Image (cartoon, rainbow, N blue to C red; front, top):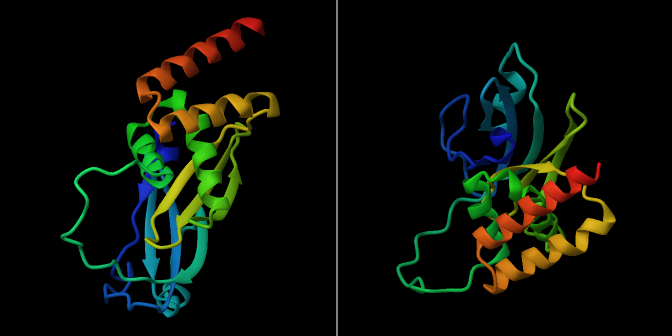
Length: 188
C-alpha cells in the first residue's frame, strides 16, 4: 500500500489561478484520488468555490497558508533525530513492516500538536486512511491506521523509543516486526 504513505508538500501557488499564496491568508487544501495515488491541490478559497470540477475530493480542509521560513545557513552538522524527522524517513522508505511505527509516530505528533488530523476514510477493505497536516510546514501525510490492538501497543511504543534514542536501527526494528507478524499469522 505504498500510495497511503506519501508525503504531499504544500503548494506555494494556487493550483487553479497559479497566483502565489500569501503568508497568513486562508487556503483550501484538497486531495484528489488518482489511480496511482493522490494529488494535493492548494487554492485560494474564492478560486476553489468558483472553479467548476467534475470530481469530488478524497479529502478537503481549510487552513492558513504559512510561507516557508528562509533557509538557515547555520544548521548543525549532526543532530539527534526527532519524531518528525523519523516519521518522514519511515514514510519515504515505504516499508510495510513499519506501518505500526509510522502510525504511532503520527499519533504522537498529533498529541504534541505538530500534526493535525484533517480527515479519516474507511476503505472498501475496511482499512482506515488518516490524512494529517503538519501545522508549521503544511505538508500532508497520508497514514494507514493499522487498528493496533491494545496488547500490541506496548511493543510498538518500545520500537519507537528505540528508534528515537538510537538504541536500535531501522533494520533491527523492521526485522523484529516482520518476525512478530509471521508469529501472529501462524497462531491464527
